[in-house]
Image (cartoon, rainbow, N blue to C red; front, side, top):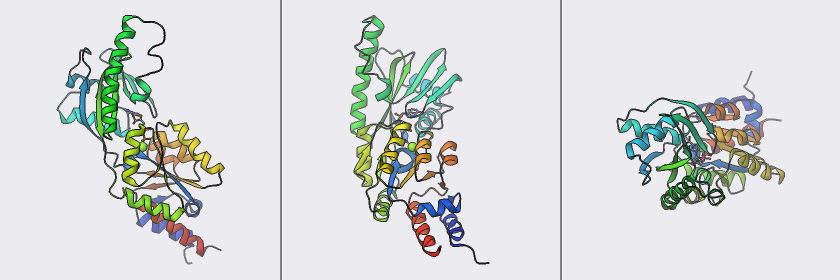
Length: 311
Ligand code: ADP
Ligand code: MG
C-alpha cells in the first residue's frame, strides 16, 4: 500500500528533525493562521550566561558568596536562567552547598533553604515588590529592605535597558544582590519569524515572562512588533484564548514549564526539544528535536502539502 499523505508527512517532518505526535496534529499544523512564540529558549538560544555579579552594599556577601547562594537555590531548577547561575558557579570552581525545601514558581523564580537561610532567586519585577514597600510598619527592617530594593532596582533598570535579564537574590526576604544574564537570539530566529508571517498572513507575537525592555529589544532583532511581556503562565493562555476568540487558530512555540498551559490551550503547540522542559515536551503536539527553529515553517508547509492530497 502507498503511505497515506499525512503519515508520509510525519515521516518527512521526522527527517527534518521534528517529532509530530499524530496524524491529527500533522493535519492541524497547516491550519494555523496566527503564531505566538516564547522568548527564552525559543526565540533565543536558551543558553544564557551570567555576565554580572553584584552584591548589594551592606548585604554582608561578596561576589562569590552571592553566586554560591544563588547556585545552591537554583540547583534543582531546569530553567535556562538557573542553569546559567549554576554553570557560573562551576566555571569559577566554587563548591555549591546543599539546599533543601526547594520550591519553584513558574515565571517568578525559586526558593530554597541554603546555609540556614531562605534564599529566593528570580524576577526583579515580582520580587522587589514596589507595592508594599511603603505600606505600614516603618521598622528598621522595612527601611533596610526599602533601600536595598532601591539599590537593586537601579542596577536592574540599567541592565534591562541594555537588553540583559536581571535576576535578584533575596536572603530571608531581603535583597542581597543582583545577577545579570545575557542570552543570544537564535541565528534562524528572524528568518523563521518572517517565514511564519508569510505562511499565516499575520505578524507573530512574542509572549514572555521576562521584562518589557529586554523583550522589546530582542523582539526588534527578530522582527516581531507585537510583544507581551511580564506574563505569568496563565497570562500566556489568556493571550492565546483572546486570539482564538477572534477566530484565529494559534500556533504556540515554547520550551518552558511556564509555556505548558499555553501549549495545551493552543490550536497546535510545538515545543523546543533540546533544552525544553519535560512538561512542555509532553504537553506539546509536536517537538523540534533537532535544535532549529526554522524547521517550524517547514512542517507547516509539509502539512499543507499533505492536506492537499487528503480527500
Ligand atoms: P520566558 O517566558 O521568556 O521563557 P519565564 O516565564 O520562564 O521566561 O521567566 C520569566 C522571568 O521569571 C525570568 O525572566 C526570570 O526573571 C524569572 N524566573 C523564572 N524562573 C527563574 C529561575 N529558575 N531563576 C531565576 N529567575 C527565574
Ligand atoms: Mg522559555
